[in-house]
Image 1 (cartoon, one colour):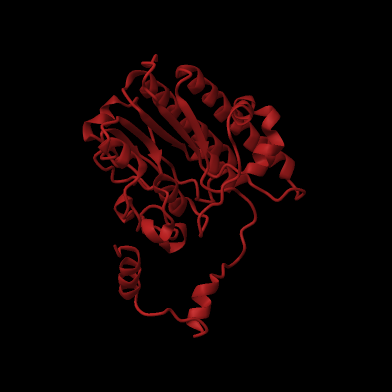
Image 2 (spheres, helix red, strand yellow):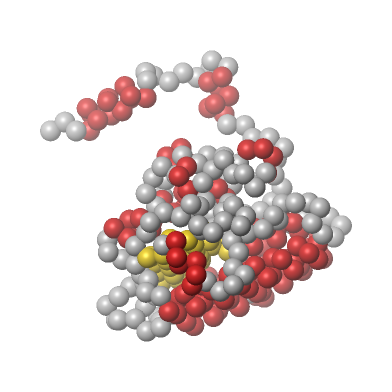
Length: 297
């Protein structure tokens, strides 16, 4: 696709759970990611508290912390993803595609977690992780789903531990390649100024295979994950070649991967519970005081 010299487009690819340490270990085996890091700006980002996808993606897409987005935790009921208590309506702030769309720019939003049910946008949206199984209302506009190739899926039950390794990998690669096929076609054929696509499989494969370095089976698991990331790297290479040099490419992740502590302590909350910490006045009073101080002529 060739763009007018005056137009500036942004292609944003989210790699859910991409760990910077994993990337550093294997950057020479992932040439496209390596090239993007060396030719552009790169660095480690601090995730949200808690560092979970459903809290982090709304923050990444809004620039606001979980207290403001309204999404602060995981779904309830011990990872029962089939009946999610969270959805796109849980998000209480405008997201980047809302702002861009209001400025008469075309947006494409594909597979971003917590976008079901899809909201009206100036362009199109395909909802992502936590879209209910067998849902047919996962696109905006609703009829846009008819433009996707048969077999397109948003997710599968990757957290079911009874799923064996071979079946998991087969389903993961099938879903990933089908999404890539559709994304590549949409980038070429649809008008857009901002295109956002999140690869969820990078998170899922690490949930299934990630081990602490040095533990039995670590090298085998690392190799399996690296094979999948090579697939991602090749996809990024195709995308890079499909856009012109004026397009800004952004690669981002919502969190890394590593050993999770058995519990979290939020110090201010604990201090308040034990009556060691009190807040001065009510929230409404604090807001009024703030406004009176900063709005004086």
